[in-house]
Amino acid sequence: MTEEQKAEDQAKTGSILVVGGGISGLTATLEAAEVGYEVFLVEQNPYLGGRVAQLKHYFPKLCPPTCGLEINFKRIKDNPRIKTFTLAEVESVSGGPGSYDVSIKLNPRYVNEKCTCCGECEKACTIEIPNAFNFDMDTTKGAYLPHNMAFPMRYVISPKIVGTDDAKRCVEACKYDAIDLDMQPKTMNLKVGAIIWATGWKPYDASKIDNLGFQYQNVITNMMMERLAAINGPTGGKIQRPSDNKEVSSIAFVQCAGSRDENHLPYCSYICCMASLKQATYVREQYPEAKIYIFYIDVRAPGQRYEKFYKKVKADENVFLIKGKVAEVTEDPSSKDITVVAENAVTGEKVSQTVDMAVLATGMVPSVAGAKLPGGVTFDPDGFIISDLAQGGMFATGCAAKPLDVVSSNQHATGMALKAIQTVVNG
Image 1 (cartoon, rainbow, N blue to C red):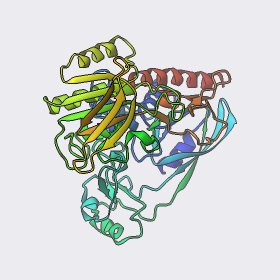
Image 2: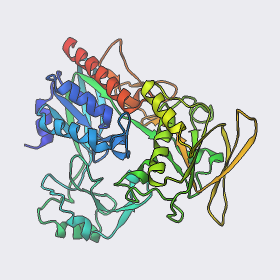
Image 3: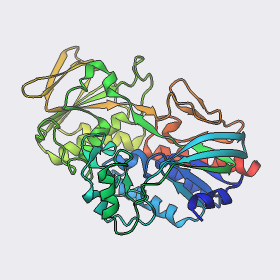
């Protein structure tokens, strides 16, 4: 019996569906399962972990993702009440609180459970594709492991190479009969009592902000910066400017890149100030003499711990905070250096600072903004999902509900798991 058949046989109205396998989805899943409820966790990517998996460090302890994720992965693996499905998406939802009928589409991975992650298929593959995990800053093979702590720890064959000679070479290279190019999409039907939408967030599209220079090679986003600094990133953790791999001697952080702007995102994205302060420490660790310029409207450091971190970074003699909204970012065509122009809101002076590279603190956009989710899911004007707290049954958590950091996402997910359990119990 396949895992999908087991899920359909075991599904009942006492079950909970969690949509999204980022930190909020993982927390909601574990909180519900560890008090006795069956949980089905579906994730559209081929791995769990969401945005946290892409970070170098996360607050409050500045831990690497392995610190928290691998513990959660072990808890999921050891809990028979949890069934996880990657490369999966919700197609339809009918019914009501306490009794939903859900249809899940399972997309082919082209690699089965026999995979040992030996990597021979990757070696045999010659076609390279953009690496979405690194925001296309490098490429990966058409047969790939999403990242070095992927869960499930299993390779993926990109649909882009299926039908090519490369795909045949991958099959021939696999000693374990783990590659199945005949896999087809499947549909799985579940009956659950409650649904938690933990669909997460994506960075705002910086190319829409005409004046901030994202078209220049040495202007990157804050999430791209996380990947540059991460040990499993495109440069092995070495922060260097993209145009020529030069070591960084100066860098500018541009805050509220698209956030708090009626033309883009009218709301504060909550995490951006702290993310830039954190990334300033990445640079200072690698380059003790580097100069860091942070252009901000207001520094928002919510809570005592974040305020303490802000003051520590602010006290660094090589970190310069300039209160002023950036008006323009330009490039010197010959040197590829970047110049950031702003008006200092304190002195009233025009500031023009030339640096090796610039980082845009792009805002947080709910991943499903603009989408039409099944089951009558409703959204606020900014695209965040509204939980039906009155009727119950449908709940949003983490950054699907509002901009949050990791700690707040975990707390929020715990609360929504309780709400889902209440629906199941009362249903």
